[in-house]
Amino acid sequence: MLSARSLFQEIVDNDDAFQLFCSIAASGETQGGWENARIAALVPDSMRDMAPKIARHGADEDKHGRIFNALLRRRGLPPVPVPPETDYTMLLERRGIGLPHAKLRRGDPLTERDIVVYLAHSRVTEQRAADQMDMLVTHFGEHPELGRAIRLISKDEDNHLAYCHEELLRLNRAGHGRTIAAVLRESALAEIAIHRDVSLAVMAHMGRLLHWPRAKSAALATGIRGMYAYERLAGWHRMVSLEMPERRDALGGPATTAPEFA
Ligand SMILES: [Fe+2]
Ligand SMILES: [Fe+2]
Image 1 (cartoon, rainbow, N blue to C red):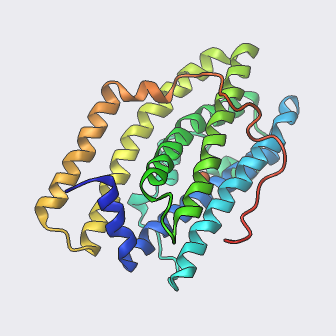
Image 2: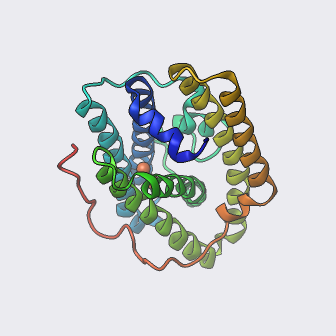
């Protein structure tokens, strides 16, 4: 039976597949951490009060990167290079979604619009992260090796998503509504296509590592394309809505640590 649970179980049970999975995850989280840290450092003066939360967001993502690396270490596995076609963050950046890394690297001061773009982009990608972690918690939240890590990351991703909703609603009221709506739409439509491409690429690598029969790989690819068709038709709306979260000020206060991992 092909289910998210059985697929992930296969990946967890195989060192090569687990190594690739954790390496891809660690790299994505670390890139997210770097982006947020740079943005926090370059926030315009008019939005200075947002900097601590952006920095906290970055510290959380960085911690997630360290957690995935710790999971590798505990199994005695080094990280492996991330195949470019599986590099979600890089592919989004290349499509012009979010803020250009070159701009962040150079340290150009950011505008208010840049911050709105960053938050709208994050509202979309954090939805994906929160949904994926939610799925992992459902099936592996009690797993002896992974449960704690997954639950911890999942809680953070929920906070990140809540923070994006709250901040964007505030910026909506401050007159940025048109930009927010446009960037949310553009980001969501690009994200669902990149998510499909990355999923297909990751599954192709997993299929090779796990020696999947051709029919299984084909069925999975069909499933991924079907999910994209659904998201393109209707599902993407879920990524662009804005609602006041139950948990307010989710990134207020200092970042939480995970000393047992890193
Ligand atoms: Fe994360
Ligand atoms: Fe996140």
